[in-house]
Length: 475
Image 1: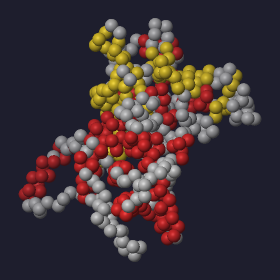
Image 2: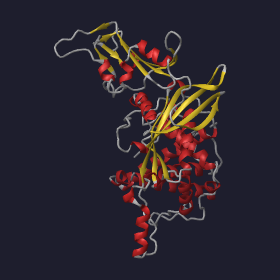
Image 3: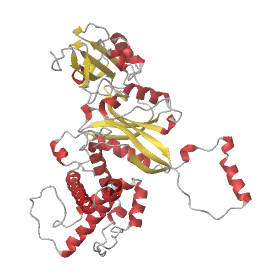
Image 4: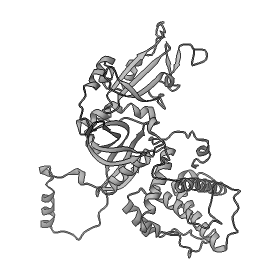
């Protein structure tokens, strides 16, 4: 059967591709979880079609513990080459995405995983252990300079184009490879009859990169020439004793994947929280950021950050200063609706990036507005008539959000005429308020074991109809 009308030789790549996590048995590997890729356009073509086959099957197996891969490609009929037109060489295409060990024969693969070490554990060290639905999970932390960590990353890097839209590989031969920290998520199960041994099933992973961050120091008193020479000697740069890892840095979550069979169990938020807590207590980290998150990850992050910040007394003490008077059109808008110095102090301690902190603070303050003025997702829900004081508090909150949205979109808004600019700004703030209401509803229903994201890294279209209506509008 043709998967593309008018071309009997074209096959839908995602339908042909099957991924399985397997365990060794006495005879051959046995699948324990199977799933299909979410994206294949960067591996094959934009239409995600493979030319030249009927009955094409691409089977990619991974040993569930050490993720040793094995690729098998078979078909019922292959297109006979005519001139330059020939069938896609699937094996050749996938060699760019898989290590050489993946192309061993199936018998060799089965034998290799059957003979693997009985006491195998993931590379690195245990960063956290937790339970979900009577299952035990471990997060293992390792540096990419570790050969075992690097080997595992090379085996699973094909998941990046498959599950992260626009995702790119880590350059494992980069001289700065030690700036990468990897967090592997595994389910741990006791081996029957052997209390000291466990079997591991890979569930997902995340990569974190450290950017050295230059910070302008507070000028000290002018040192004498003797003092200056002494300090330079203490650094001992010429002796290579200076540890670059001790420099201030911005820690960026780059890739974040929970495999499809393990989504919906609260593993994504837990992995994010483990990573966040690791760097919250790492003195060199100034900020924890995320590289180009998709909207599902944004939701998970917003809710996780909101719950984290709400456990901080200094965050809960932040409030709208209702004594502020909003001037008329010719006046200067107040910029201290919430005490800026106090908010910045909380943000720095929490190590959350400024824009993300501002969003979560606005969301939190919106939840504290009186019911009569608090935006919601149901426009028909009856509310009481607001008092003048309640309306004033809402107007201050609205002004604070509008100022942030304007700063973020200043260049685009500056190209519009003033009436259109005001209308577009109000429309965008309304969309932000609606999105906050949606997230607050999720946050109120949030449980530690409830996942609010599919857990995967970069921007993609929402598939859920309700979330589609609630997408954040951008100017």
